Length: 171
Image 1 (cartoon, rainbow, N blue to C red):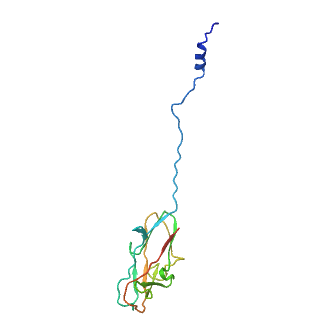
Image 2 (image 1 turned 135 degrees about the vertical axis):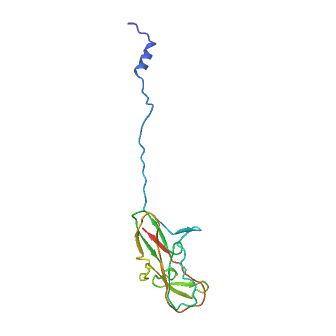
Image 3 (image 1 turned 180 degrees about the vertical axis):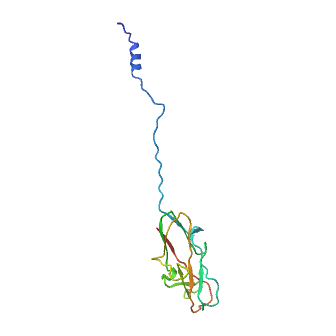
């Protein structure tokens, strides 16, 4: 048999052909994690606020003054994911005492007007920094009115009286 050497490389190449696939499949995993989270209040000028409860204008404090907050005017807005338990607490304001809150005269800090904030319209439960109000998120805005009371007291000098209460929403 007479084999020519130039055919030998061609036979070797034909017997060792490599198959290269024209496509390849793989899987892609998809995941998302919903974190237990809440938002509260409204943002204005870079800070979060619940608005202001305004007791109004009075010449004397010889009678009790009751007010109820409204949306964007003192009511507490909370939006937590559905099923998430949360708590709303309020501190004692500048007085530092939840049972004896005071508004202070803006020009003479020695002058004060006693007031308090409550969780119910009957004004029997003070909104404090321990128990507060507990609820469960619905995934939508939930509004909580704040019930304010200025008890009858000796009327201090005329002027503007203010206080700032810190509200904490924890979950």
